[in-house]
Length: 411
Image (cartoon, rainbow, N blue to C red; front, side, top):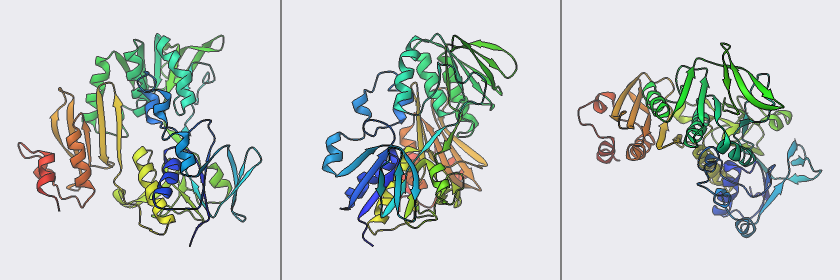
């Protein structure tokens, strides 16, 4: 069926990529890309690190120039989508306009889980999600003397590394017992903990935040769960995100940890698709369990799959999940999903800050975490993208080399 118009709600990585991929696939109909932020669509990963340090300028954040959107006939609308009229196939906008669609794509992303403590409203308290957040935070980060980071996940640790590099005293509060506990192995956590402590970061594990104290409306200290008071002229939090599924919920679409989609990224309405951080899909690499991934690469891969389907080339979404984070001089790259792994093999040296952790479940390789071992990461992606045949026994053999094994076992 030929589609005369595709409307995309959300101009982040997923939404932009759908629009760009549709044109690459030869789609000639109307594309409307709706974003509720001013300016051109931009990359988010650098916001918590290189952009704050001034290593990436604003123009270099942009996916493409204004000329690209004109040349590709992508109608960029700066407004907030407030409702979906499924009966008449149109999206209602806050400014009073409407966008009619033959097919609607929801790429609404997610928002920061708010800090549920007294004093979270004070100035000097930040989550990092948008360019506006980073623009407001950058001058304060350069001037801050005492920084408290709430949450030792990727975002929190990326900012902790930035703040330490800028000369601040950095204190990280984390409810878990180690850094990035939900994402990486104990061995990788330990490498990153040691590195951050070497940069001057202080960790407080199994510790929560009770309140934020203010002075004339500005944060000046935090109180921990065990009653200690820590000075803080800047508080940055990263305690997870919540999918932006409200518009889908109100439209009556099926919801399950986000907007529920099938293996083709189609929602319970055959005229509406969803992808990226907001979409919960049956993940081939997670036993086809409903999975929602917060990953740039997942957004890009899903966008390409979705665009191909809309031009008549449907294939189930099966891309291998992979992730990365840059913290100081450490580059962590993860291929696959390690949830529930029951054994591991280490390659490299934690002391040299060059380590790969091969994670196995039931004797099968399911994920590889690599710090400053890019070759291992690239090999792992190739191995995991096809039926994994590498056994834990092979990997544990003296002198095992992941890159060499991949090269020797290509189909």
